[in-house]
Length: 213
Image (tube, rainbow, N blue to C red; front, side, top):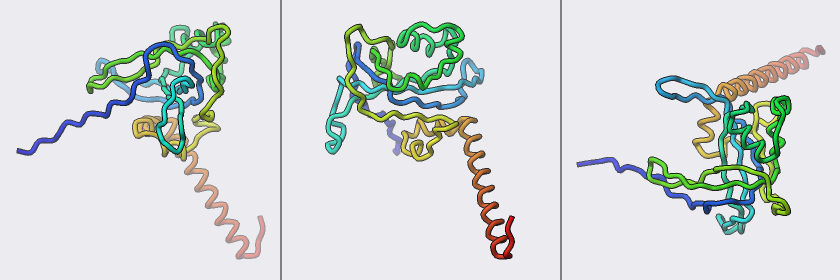
């Protein structure tokens, strides 16, 4: 008898439950992902925020010394009054008018300190994971230690970094590469490269013919 062994994802070290000082250092625009609910296909524009926890540290690699734990949360990219992103932003930075919410630039969260609550949730694979429960303002008089990680932004306009994407876990790469925003940006870059090559070829021929344009 030959049976395939059921693989179980390795249990990651959990961040302790409760309230933690945190600072947002990474904002990733994932793009429009497709999912299914009750047999209906839906499309949702997503972002991913990541915080470092300066008071929860560990030596992950000896050469780097102690580093803070980090944790991420995905949101629908919407500042509608009932959205989770709007709720957390207002709890974090303060209330926004409707116009203020419409005009809000998500990158304003970069480098901003806050308090987050960590909760543990069991997954179907049998493992337990740390999750971000709530996000809120720092308590009065509390200061957050200096930022450890460099700010990181990924978007489809001025921060489209394929080198960064290549280094990400497969689930993030697969999610981003499945979006129409990614495919459109790649098509645009390929078109620009084709135009560049054509222009270079025309310049070369002109030079060979002793002509100038």
